[in-house]
Length: 121
Image (cartoon, rainbow, N blue to C red; front, top):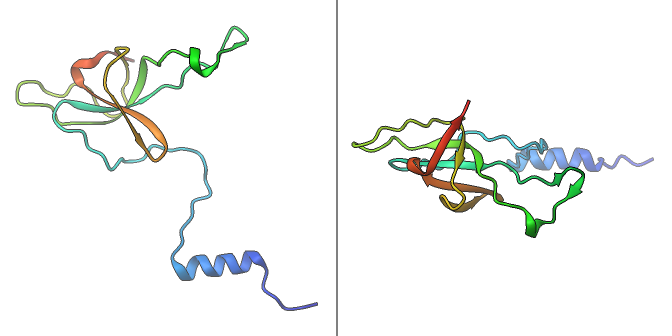
């Protein structure tokens, strides 16, 4: 038998010496974002599109855009209109509302408060 360190031991030693801090938790959590919308804008995480309808699998090309989502961040409002929406609200919005942006591989919408049609309670 040889006294070679195991691969696991090597990795842990390398990780701690070189400051590599890797999170092996692959569940997506939406922590505090580094984006703060300005004025009356909100950052929305769209709900995933439905994959099946009554046992029939819908192809990507036939899926409709989701019309609901969760607010991840909100601006402070304007001097004429206060911000009514807050982080964590589930909202309905128009089909063509907002601008799509991609952060860390996740797609978000940034839109004005007036583009939101309703809050789901």
